[in-house]
Length: 250
Image (cartoon, rainbow, N blue to C red):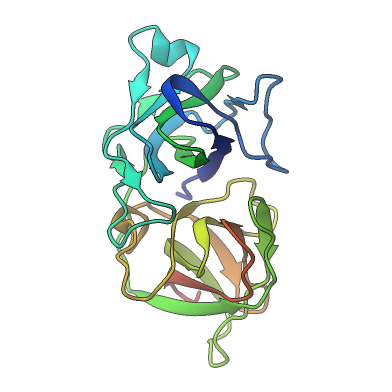
């Protein structure tokens, strides 16, 4: 069963604030953002993970009608810095995702102590993730798109030259960019865009729950029709690497 996992980002420049203030939704070509800069929850209604990043970010929170009916949801740990750390502290709920209500608005909030960019990424799903096992390999794909800072940039990917013909099943992903914050996949007409925290070097440890079959089946692609990747970067960059954990070909 293919899991519809979807990464959505809140990203906002904020002045110093000692109480919770909104982190606005980043403009997104494929998701509905309401008039108050919140995400409208679609079929991806299970909150599977959250990742908060900011140089002085001291508190991060998600709010919605269903969350607030019990208590607004606070995010810890928080990644303190201007780019993802070597071991990004993602709040992981993959084994017990939080259900949201279809059609409600999901908003992000933070407390920070200097003027800066704050980020809060969420991974949503249409059902609780189901890990998958199989004879998998990791495939290295490259891109050379000039990305634009502080917006989603779609990047073409080149597959390895010796790839066997057939259809591959994606069961994990990792994203590299020197200035990247998060990355996500686009697979043909598949509406969901699974993604993860972006790494700036090969040394950095990615979020392991998006690797090696743990997130389940994320999608498929043919050897002659590779997926593309969206990168959200803090500044311009011209080189991308995406590592795909795949089963196949069939």
